[in-house]
Image (tube, rainbow, N blue to C red; front, side, top):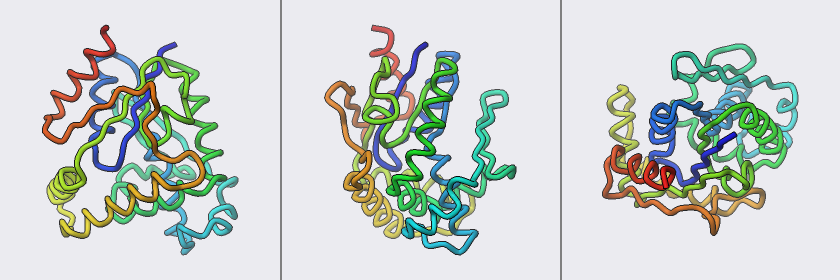
Length: 218
């Protein structure tokens, strides 16, 4: 069983790189961040503040999250509904960051992630994969980029999807999310001593993938 763990801040390209990495290696990709987005989406739909730990706890144990993969495309189901598109709205990014600070949420989702990772060779990306979810993963990477570059990438991505977004708002949201992710009490975003550090600020996606593959092939 081989697990590849990739951590890093929002907008560093983790998901894009992890998906392509899994494709090239012929193994499964698990988008753990999508699972937190699903919880954030449910909170918003239920009119619950995503910072309200008690409010989130009131439905977390009755929430069903399923991950399906067909022809290399991953779908997320929330209580039986395919929310793969809905969770990609910009507002859900902050919601995901907020609910991820709640221990009950992380405990539930981490248990699911570990169970899935134990079932097959897999690439996982997130905030605490190398430090908490899979601390014994065979390959561990910390992928980052300058905040302005990450905001620029996110702005372009959302604009191409037809969403009306403001660059400064996106940059502020990224900085806020970085702070939240790195300073939460339970399983914060951190670079472990045994993780390979990759700064993709001046890299193309292809270059970042090649660098990660080079380490794996060694």
